[in-house]
Image (cartoon, one colour):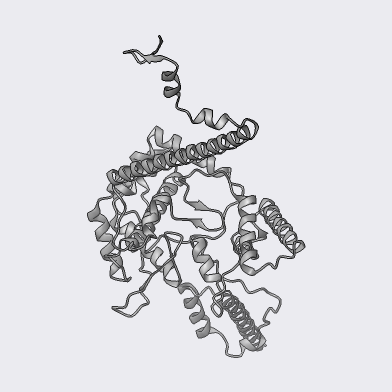
Length: 449
C-alpha cells in the first residue's frame, strides 16, 4: 500500500516540474520575440536567446500567443548633428579629377552644382589652415591665403592668373571665415562664456584649429568693448521681422537652380521671393508679415499691369519681370547707403569699387591703389568744372545773341519812325565832337574851347 502511494507522489511531482519548466520556456520565448520586434539586439539579448534555444521545448513555440496589437517600437533617433569631421566635399570624385566653377555676372559668387561643394571645401580649408588671431580678413597674410589657394586648387580648377576669378574665390573664403568665427563664438556663448568665461574657455570646440586660436578668441570675446558690440548686433538682428529661408545657398544660385533647363527661362522675381519666404514643409509662410508683404507685392504688380493694359500696351514677360522687381523694391527695400552691396531680390551685388571686374580686359586689370583713385577723382572733378564753365559760356553766348537780336529789332523800329536816325548814329562821336570845336586834353577828357 505504501509503495503504491509513493509511486503516485513521484508521478505528480514530475508532472508539476515539467509544467513549470514549459511555462518558464514559454515566457522566455515571448520576451525574446518582443525584443526582436523592438530591434534591441544587444549582447545580453543574444546570450539569453541562446540559453532559451538550448532549454526550451521545440514544440513550445507553437503554443505561444503573439500579441497582434502591440506597436513596433523603433530605436531612438539621433538628434542634431555631431561635430564636423572636416571630410572633403570632393571625396566621391575619381582620383585626379577637378571641378569647374561658374561665376555669376552681377554678384561676386559662384553658381551651379559645384558651388555648394566649393563652399563646403572653403569651410574645411579655413578651419584647418587659417589662424584666427586676425580680426579682419584683410589682415590675413598673403602667404596664408596662398596656402589655402593651393589646397583648393588640388580639387577645383582655379584660374590663378585671372584676377577677377581669384577675387570671387577670395570673397567665398571671406564668407566662410566669418561663418567659422561665428560658429566658434556661438559655442563659447552656449557654454557660459558671458557668465563663466573660464568654464567656456576649458570647453574648446572640436573643430577649432588649435588651443592657441581658441585662447586668442576667448581673450577677444571677454573684452568689454567686444561684448557691447555683440549685444548691439544681436539687438539689431532681433529687429529683423522677415528673414530669408534660402539657407547658405545664395539668391543667385537659387535663381540658377530654378531656371528651366529646357528653354533656359529664369524664374520671375516673384517666384524667387515666394521660394525664399514660403516652405510647405514648415508651416508655410515664415510669419504673417511675410505673407502680407507678398500680398502687397502682388497687388502693386496687378495694378501696374492693369494700368498698362488700359493704355493698350502689350505686356511681355520681360516687362512683367521688371514690374515685379520694382514692386518688390517698393515694398521690401529699406533706405540704403551708397556703399551698400545688397539689392532686394538679388542679394550681394558688385559695388562701385568693383567696376574693374566687369570692365573690358578685366582679366589683366586689378583694383586701383589709393593714389590712383585720388588721381582719378581729381580728373573727374576737373572734368566737371570744365563742363560747368562750358555751360556758362554757352549761356553767355545765348544771352549775347538775344541781346543783338533785340538791338536789331529796336534799330529797325526807330528807322521806320525817324528817317534821319540812321545817318545820325552812323556818324562817329569823335568826329562830331571835333567838328564842334571840342578837343581832348592830355588826360583824355573833352575840353571845350
